[in-house]
Each structure stands twice: as structure tokens, then as C-alpha cells.
Image 1 (tube, rainbow, N blue to C red):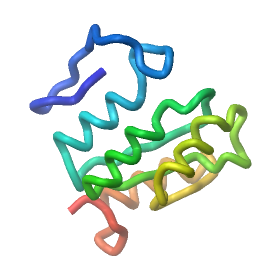
Image 2 (image 1 turned 45 degrees about the vertical axis):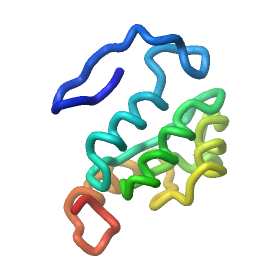
Image 3 (image 1 turned 90 degrees about the vertical axis):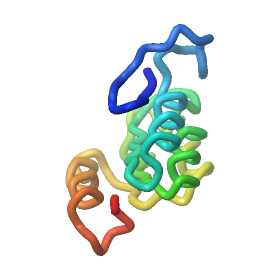
Length: 113
């Protein structure tokens, strides 16, 4: 899954992180197309999918949110993301939604300008 020109496209490219669709290509396309307006969220999951894509979002000035690994069922993805990027928010699942809303609406957050 990729974002481009205001739409979502499905890719038939080779699998990344042993899967397709994968979070990394989605996040990279969000970073390239939306820059500092992108919000990336890595939730519980296995392997390291999402870490390099979240790093791209961070590098382009976007907002990064990571599910707190201490509250995850499968902590590989959030741990890999924490190693890859200094997250704007690390939070338990119940605080992820409010963190996204804050990124979108609160000018005092690093949020989407």
C-alpha cells in the first residue's frame, strides 16, 4: 500500500519484511508525499516492520507515535521503532488515539503545520 497524489495504491512490488502490504513502504510514501504533515504510528507486532518507515517520517519532519512496548502483546515492532527513531509519543494503546488527535490539532505539539 502506497500513498501518492492524494490516493492509496496497492503495489505488486516484492515483499518487505516478509509481507505485502507492509508498513515500511506505506510510511516511506507518506513521508515523501506529505513531509511534516505525516503521522506514523507503530503498534504491537512481530519482526521489525515500520521501523525504517517511521524513521523516514521523522526525517521528513513528520510526527511519530509508538505503542509502548511494555504494554504490547508482540513487542518486536515497537522496540525496533524505538531504536530507529526518537518518537514524539510513546504510549499505551488507550492513549494512541488522543495522541493522533493532539498531533493534528494542537499547535504546541510538533504537530502537522
